Amino acid sequence: MDRMVLGKDGIYHWAKIENLSPESLYCCQVETRGVKGPLTCVKTLPRPEGQLLFAFGVVSDTHLAMDTSAGDPNETYLGKLLEDALPLLQKALEDIHEWKAKAVFFTGDLTESSGEKEYRILAGLLSSSCLPWYACPGNHDKYQQRTGGIGEEGFRRFLRQDTPYHALFLQGYLFILLDSAQKDNDWGFIDPEQLDWLKKLLEENRQVPTFIFLHHPVNGPDIWFGARNFFELQKIIQRASNVQAVFCGHMHRNAITTNRWLGGSRPYIEVSATVQFPCGYGLVRVYEGGFEYGSHEISRLDLSEKSRRKVALGLGSLYSQYAFGSLADRSLSYLSDRKKLVQPEIYSLSFSVDSGSLEHLYTQIQQWGGASIEPATGKGSYRLILGRFPCLKEAKRFQRRLARLLKRPVEIIGEKPGNSR
Image: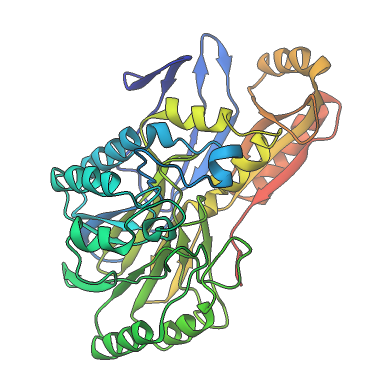
């Protein structure tokens, strides 16, 4: 472990494992100073057919802040790191460049308050980046009366975009960036003129594989200020079989959903915020026969954990689960020739324990295996994770063995795809 991040409260290690074979089982166990974590087994996803063509990054909700805060609940209660927004964005771009990406796409809320100083610093950072970049605005990028910002003018003047929605061709693929943001309004809306433009563009490029980007979620109604007219957009996408995926931000979480009625297996991918736990970005690897998507934490784990620790009101564990998502919310393989979406499954073996019994049980488990400790719902309650497996059959086999050793019930918690709307 020669790669690490030095944080304020300790050292955070991270590993990057490459060149794994598709559809193969891999197992690992972390050990440090004689203390073992749980045995974790995962099965890699199938690789799309054909050659790897190129890769691109997806970054969302960077909330670059200088002088003014928009004062949203994420900052007050849920660990939004405005003070660290700039280094997190810088590191995200470095990480994506290390993956040899051809470009990076931003899905809105690049600034916190749409301030002129924020836009100026953002433009300077992006112009010095090694990566070509393309952006669509978020609700924060159009604040004016609420924060004293300059709104859409910032996109036009500093990011040099004549219109907040546009399209481009890259490596034979069509990339469409929509504008779902409104002035001083957190709800999303895609105006009729833009929908007509999108419909015509897709009809003229029926044979060109396409990716769509916008800020607000559009796969069904959402309680957190999603796009109000999502249904109109979905009907246009339904008729365009060449659209391979739709990317958005706004929700500050990892989530992958589908719409069986209006989109089949086409994924709608919500990308986590750089500025809030898990402080991540998305990476897409495009093949001749489809694409792979993976969510990655920025290699500043000290800041990711800082965000997690700032979550207030005892919501830390619940918010971490919401924002990090399941394994099926963080990775997928899309086989375009078969219109097939493949996501991983994982089954965790665990049991709950109170703080009084935690140390004794953890020490006991170390004698014949390993475990990790996670906060559980309820004050003074924890969950010991004993193992993770990619199929239910294997999880049940270990469940019986562990229950005999521990002389107590062991629970199986499944994380599997099927998050459709």
